[in-house]
Length: 81
Image (cartoon, rainbow, N blue to C red; front, side, top):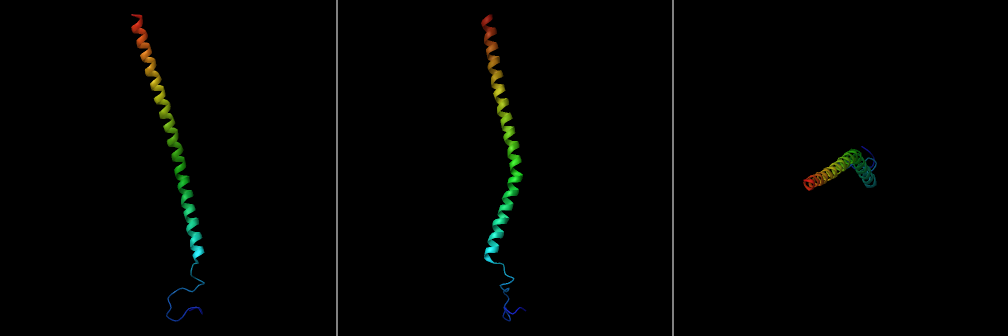
């Protein structure tokens, strides 16, 4: 039993109890680590999603242009008859 504890006292002594500042900094650093891991995991997925969205937009634009061209060709053929 340490000299700072009273007989029957179940509380840890000040030397072994974590300080509030230590707990605070542990929570801050642990939260930062979790956020960093989340970013490292999610950012590549977001980049892939953005690339797919850009491809989808490009293909949609191409389809619209081809539909316009088909309408133009159809009108041109009907005009020549």
